Image 1: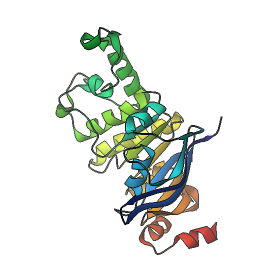
Image 2: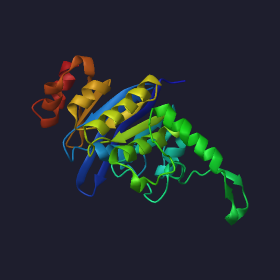
Image 3: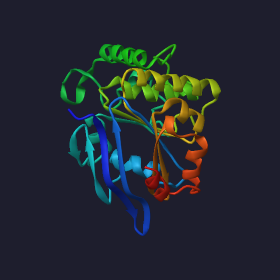
Image 4: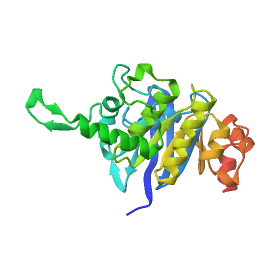
Length: 256
């Protein structure tokens, strides 16, 4: 079994004449936590949308879990084991925690066609197990999402990724709209995922968070990967230099 969970080769996305992503070569290994950084419009989210099949790539190749893949939609990517927490969270406010975690993946107790009966007990037990696995603390899982804080909502979204047999978790700015305490709670969950060997891709603008939690930092600029840095071999100033263009892709390649 290959140690590489995800690998892309020449991944490219054009929107007409706009080259949003160009020739992205990337890989992440089992148990590794990799940050993706860059200014707004640098290509970070475009890159994730190609991996997860939210959009179809213009060209390039993707290997996941040792196999060449061409996912047609996000559902295929999710079923293969890629779980994504987007900034919008994609939670149903009027539903409780188990219903959100199993939305679209409900456990059927009796399959009676359009009148199938759901196994609420099994979904509740799996929800509790998922929360425990990630260290998420929700006082009452029967509360609807609309009655929860921003931090609790984010934690539910992350717990959803760990409730199923995910092989890769992608988080897009998971703490951008959170306060200090709620941010700390999410960061503790990320540490727990690390301890459990779950590979994570984190898109973040938070340098302190990235340096605290990640193993590697991949920098995007103007649609291209311009640096791939090990945390222990770099610092915040070095990363910012690549983000702003003070250091270039050519300088990175020369240093390597």
